[in-house]
Image (cartoon, rainbow, N blue to C red; front, top):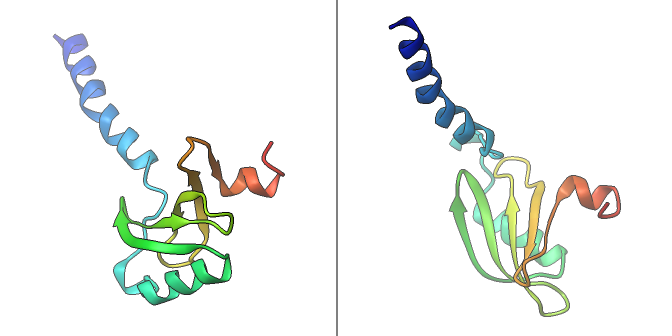
Length: 103
């Protein structure tokens, strides 16, 4: 009986841990920068914005890069750090990979 309860507890807690691990953008709403600041970030980077939305606690920019390629950019809401740039051709780069030259 004790073994069954232990297994049940582990199964119950496991999905919660996975959900928390995916949360790159936890920040209180009071600390969030406005969407206008996100749009300004996009302009500085040469991106054309089609839409800015909120997804999993992050800002997400749908648009095109300077070369006209479709991109989806994940931005931290309070720091405006670029967390990930996903190209619509299927390649995605996280900020730390870009800092190392994409390795």
